[in-house]
Length: 375
Image 1 (spheres, rainbow, N blue to C red):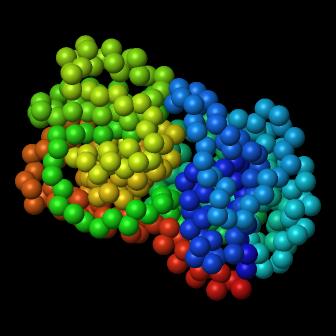
Image 2: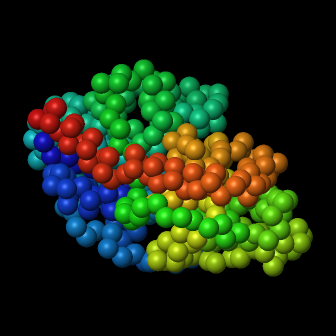
Image 3: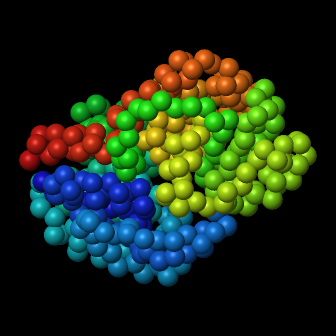
């Protein structure tokens, strides 16, 4: 069996996974619906030029003909238009499977429908957490639910990324025999537990935009008991000036550091030194791979309950707080700094344990088992 992955465009996290699977001798090929992201580009949300390097190295891939000149990697139905999909599907063998990342584009929907009627196995891997479904109401909710019911009837397998995503599929009545655990993961750092000192540092890593709720963290930071601590914002975005203004208003300007967009080496140093990594995001944060990155270094975490990974990646290694509840976030940060050394080291140990389940190695094991069962 050969596995084909259909992606909208090259994404660093996924590219790392494809390289890993290829090195583990799993037969894969990646199809991209567009070339967006293969060259340096301006990221409006980050308010920075994003540099691209090595996205396509180390695994088989090809770009499908895309006739939409305005593709911008947004989750829209006609963001990519790939008229030769049918011709590409004809090259698959009956035992192969093509896994679509999501269903938001006409390209993915077309593959799901065509594969079923052409006799090929088709799977879906998406990020959708059940907790975010409450944001759909009225006719939009009705339409979404019924369209997904139809698509899921045509889908052979569902590759879920975590508990919240698993629960989403179960809500649609998907049986466990069709569900395969393929967790969201990041490139492994192969770090083992080491004693970790508290350095009075709280880290936020990501875009400074409303979805990420950095303003909630800033306000909470101004209220915590540990006045020797510093808050580091690693990233950039449209809310930077607001955050600077608020830090002055809250009287904490000298304790808040805006580092801008960081390279991988710099980020790793930040993860390895931070007392805690905080992700206060809300609707739209369907997983939160930044938490996976922190776990590779054993970093304790504090995560909003609206973040897709909260159920899985915060297990005895930090705290989950109520979304938008600044007082609750203050309480959880105070807990981090009020615990004794033994308690804090247990958080570090549990972060290392959590990364082992949500890893490329786990993906490899589960896909290998899946291939044997279906070959």
